[in-house]
Length: 78
View 1 (tube, rainbow, N blue to C red):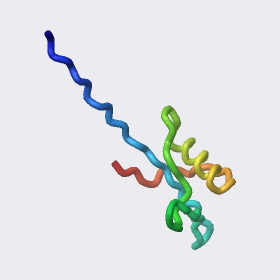
View 2 (view 1 turned 45 degrees about the vertical axis):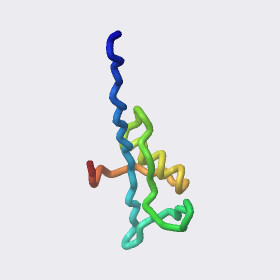
View 3 (view 1 turned 45 degrees about the horizontal axis):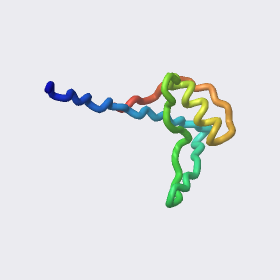
View 4 (view 1 turned 30 degrees about the vertical axis):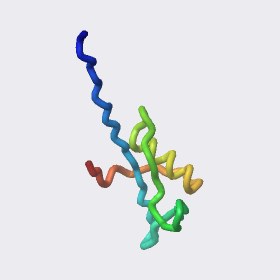
């Protein structure tokens, strides 16, 4: 009997986006309440097949109700 081949698990990376929405010295933050209250920049996960800037626009709209037009990409961490 031939040995059974085991497939390696597929590594799935989660890509997240966050927007810095500033006016003067003020920055828009959203309140997160998952167990304990905290504040963060609006953003979230990029869906499969979705572009980074499109995901950012969608996440900001979902969390703040504001439509945004990103000016560019500020930082990428791997």
